[in-house]
Length: 121
Image 1: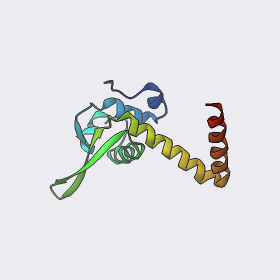
Image 2 (image 1 turned 90 degrees about the vertical axis):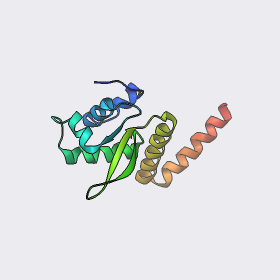
Image 3 (image 1 turned 180 degrees about the horizontal axis):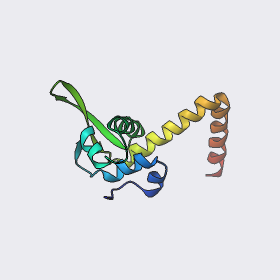
Image 4 (image 1 turned 30 degrees about the vertical axis):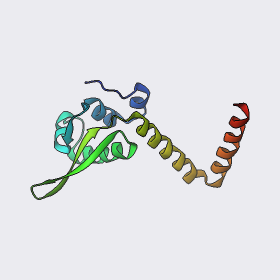
């Protein structure tokens, strides 16, 4: 597999198919879903690749643009190279899921934790 800037701890946090797709992408290159499917053909169906690409987009690991194609539009994906944006999106997703699951208890915990850290700094 080709290597890229994605840290190993991030790769380990992904599903095996997500990791295979990310490892297959080259920086500064644009891919259609069909192209990415060809890279991981024996590991997933084309519809599974589309779903995984949407998840990777939501996680901030790939960027996505729309282009006009014969018969409609299609997404074109590229490897996201802004590590800071990726990390911000991951933290945002984790915090939002914790708040969604635990509600106000999570918010109270975050506030108390931040106050303690502020006193220690």
